[in-house]
Each structure stands twice: as C-alpha cells, then as structure tokens.
Image 1 (cartoon, rainbow, N blue to C red):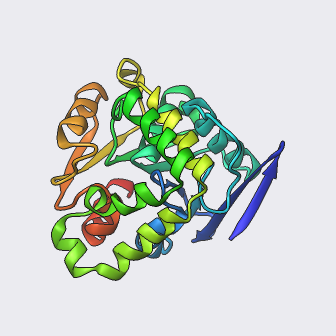
Image 2 (cartoon, rainbow, N blue to C red; image 1 turned 90 degrees about the vertical axis):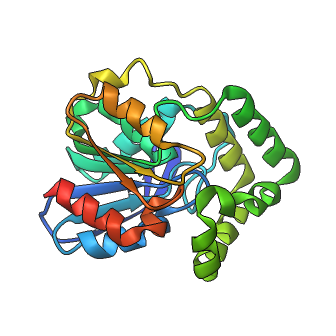
Length: 258
C-alpha cells in the first residue's frame, strides 16, 4: 500500500502480482475503497500485475472540496499511470469506476488495452437524484446513505448469508468522507456518455447483475449495443457483483483477459 503525490493531490494505491506481466487496474464504486477488489486480486496476481486505488474522495486518497467532474476522475487515473510509468492497462471499473473506465476509453484510448465495465451505465440516474443525495450527505453526514446501502448493493439472500461482509462494507461507507462522497455524486449527476461510447475501440466486456436495481441489465444492453464487438455477461448478483458472485466474476474476468 503506497501513496502517490502529484501536483497538490495524493492517491492511495496498491501494486502487486506477477512482475513484468500485463497490468490490470481496478476502480472502486461510489462509497467503497480499493479493498472491494480483494477476491479478484487474489486470483489475478498469479498471472498479472494488479493495480488498485482509492478514487478521489474515498479511502486514503485526497478528498478535496467539490463538486468533482468525470473528467477529473478520469485524469486522476491518467496521472497515477504516468506516476507509475505505466503506458497501458486493462481497466476494470464497477459502477462509478465503470463510468470512469468509459471516459478513459473514449478520451485516452491509447492507455486502455482492454475495458471491463461492471454494474454500470453510460448514464446513471438523474441530476436531480444525485444532487439530492449530495445535499443530504452534506447536511446529515453518511449515516442516511449507509443505513440504506445494503439492499441497493446486495440481494436479500446474500445479506442473510453473509452479514459480516455486508456490515464491513456498510461500515466503510459510513466512514467515507462526506464531502468526497457528495462531490462524486455531483460528478455522476452530469456524466452522460451515451452519445460517445460508440467511439470506444478497446476490446470491451460488460458485466451486469441479474438483480441490480441501480444499473440494470437494460443499461448493460444499451452499452453493448453501442460498443462494437463488446461481450456481455450477466451474473446472479445485485449491484456489487464482484463481491456477491466473486468466483463467477473472477472466472469471467480471467477468461476475457487471457
């Protein structure tokens, strides 16, 4: 675990795995940290170099006063890659991280060898809903969001069978910097890539959860219809499919990457 400093920003990241192997970079969802990729890191580090990081406003990375923009979140990735002297990576992002990945594949295609978009959409929600959540968090802190997170993230069956996993993630959400979270909400409020994703040329895998109420299989179908040659996979999970269906997720990822 290391911190990269550039300009006035700093980002927490972990780089591990097989030395001199292709790099797979993971980007976390809103309200989580790089630790959400533990299961995938365990599998992939035998054959790949694995790079995880805390997105701006999350974990141990900088949480500047917002609002943030999608361009800012994307450029954070580019700066981190430059800092690590990595010219190109396979990029896997979930939810907010998936939107960041789409932006990178559109605006910095030379940096993305393969793109994996998980439980995401070309446009997530509405500006009004995101701004409302940002205002709520700034006024009342993270508790209202954390209290309602589990049913958005996981199915009832997973919540019942894996209570410690669920509570660990919701506790981490409760501890997220409110300004950082709210500012990322504002970045998502105006992130709309529906007209641009047709320009993506990187080999792309789109993963959705059958039971995801946030970014649905319909959202995944839309992206697949616009990104030429993309592959589509649905998993028996809700919004955080890499955790709820971790084995199937990792297997799907490995099959795409090799």
